Length: 88
Image (cartoon, rainbow, N blue to C red; front, side):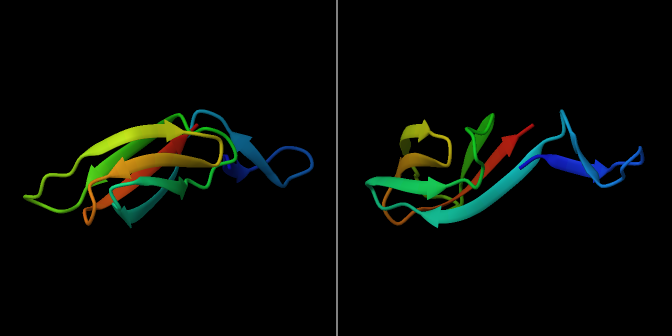
């Protein structure tokens, strides 16, 4: 998915805007084992951030691998986290 804007030139419609970040995000809970999470892009996003949500609790992220439609991550069992993927 790319950022779009109205095309004011001949033909109208929409056109892609390069250089504009497009974000997708979600939340999940760690299982202590490899998890496969869809990031919603058709290609590998340029950026993937992982944010622990359990304040005051130790959360360990490991084994991060980002692929075209999803990413793999192992997170401490029972610990909630958010993820934000960006492409531009």
